[in-house]
Image 1 (tube, rainbow, N blue to C red):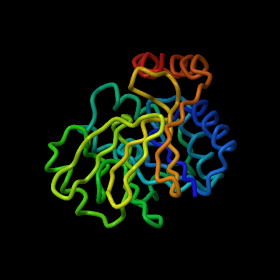
Image 2: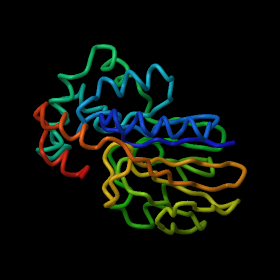
Image 3: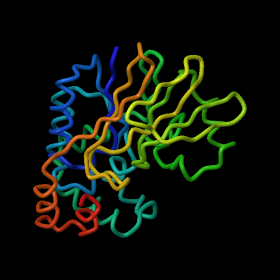
Image 4: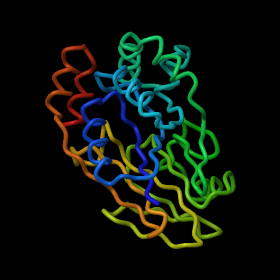
Length: 240
């Protein structure tokens, strides 16, 4: 069985459409999202409504949470908070209601899904934490593999039973059966690894592997909309 995992779409509708077109070729049995559907990108309402229409299960990300919790301004830098303020004004009542209903985590068979770190954090950046603390997260869920977002980095953490080992995801990474993992599948809407492509991953339960999919999209269209709607220029520059 193949499962597609989307992360950090961040209002980038053009990237989402291109990723979904790529997914159609693979025909996975299921699609999940690790959160942050909105903010930074110029078309948050279209992104949310597309996720609703396609019935793609998602957890809540910190940016999703912030659009209806203005008291959390201190969580964000000036650019991120300005993006959230603009995003809030672009969202319909339907989209706001949907975002507010998203769960902190999801489980599916042997998979655990959360935005930041297990069991239910959308605030923790896993790459900022010491290995002993990351190892402790494996005690917070029983599934063999957890998928997270938040950092936009293609990384995975393998639990040895005592500590965790961090590695970069290759184009195809074969996992060890019997080991446990936390996997970050990068970002659909705002990659930060020097590669402009939208990214998502396919988990193949039979091959027990993670495939990183690199998808081109109309970046210039997204960039021009960012400028037009008054988002911080850095949001566009990060895509180029």
